[in-house]
Length: 131
Image (cartoon, rainbow, N blue to C red):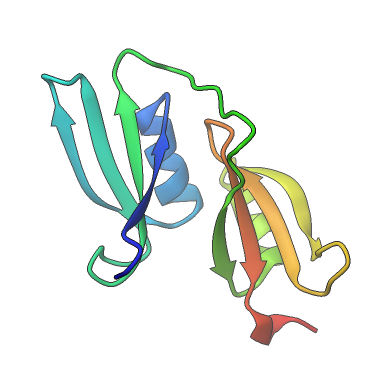
């Protein structure tokens, strides 16, 4: 068994695709409209689906906003340098909601960014890069 994908419902598909591809550097792997069901599925990731887990962005055509609820936590992405990654994300118009720095009660360097729908993405600095 292996993890295939995580699905997020998004209100504005193009804004989400722009964020995940242009700001976070993922690739659009595939996208398909389902007119009868009035939804679109778009899969984004750093690797092909056969190589690693990806995100499925589900856009229901008649819904432009979702209540995230209190059960959702975050998506985690490993980065080489959390400080530089935050700077690059801000330069591309992304929203950093917790600047890079050591996690509370630990030494792992983390940061948090937010996508256009308010989903949190944790950036975890590669352990080999920590001081």
